[in-house]
Length: 368
Image 1 (cartoon, rainbow, N blue to C red):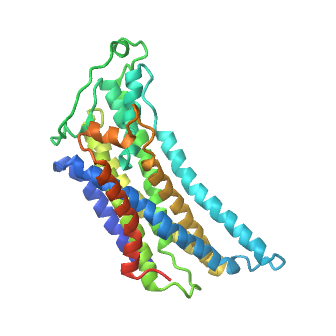
Image 2: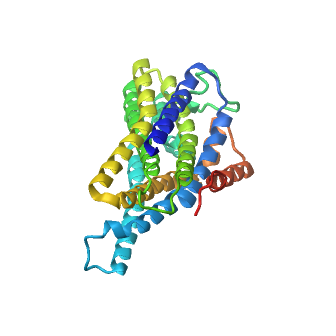
């Protein structure tokens, strides 16, 4: 039953992501709405991690610790508890560290040819899933000498209030200036797509792990399992929609990106999370078949790991103190995009997102 439910959710995720990815190619959508949805997804990911995913993972680890350590007859209960705590910490750190490495690897600062260039590179570290798309947008702005606004203007839905800056003389005559804008854009696009693909696989791990239920856990019911799946599915989809929209806008706005590469990239991005979910389910099922009832223990660690990935994305988004001239990164990015989300509205959206997983789990029936 768990696998059938997973296949249904993976299929829905595939078509929903495809819709969000290809929508900017055919329709004009408001970037203001995308920014608001992205802000809401920040709180949703954080709430899902802190109230659902991590607590469920910890509970599963301790509930199935006895079966996992059956062979260690000489070890005491306290030693097992200490080991479980260490495993939980390592799984949480591994999830957080994985996303940090992905972000650090494919997030490159623009060439330091001028102070204005560095300022714009910092300026465009956006507060949401769009921040994952920084390399492509930064390289495009640097090579073209002006701001691209994620390609929204070139696609017919430019936000109001756009300002175009003239490159500084020092930058215009810099001997270190890029010689091939197309090569830079293509290279940056590739690194951005790779980073998003790995991130989507991590999202799939979360969904796949939540679909595995412990066979010996008497406290787990089909309703509880369905609630956990639904909460994680909602958190992933609300987070992926703005990322898919922004990725499509960026790829379509760059003249150096061929339609073939753009379509293949969007298709791969849409397939990554569903495939990751199915592969995680199969892997955990095989581990459970070999190790008996220890499947619940491994499932718990997988949930904690996915919670770590959620925490990084949420905290990476909410670090608003790294702006320039005393203005937060979120405000800077949104102002430049012409789609600002006011301070009070941002707070309301984030808080609403944080509370949504808990409220949804109570409505569906999750809880012990």
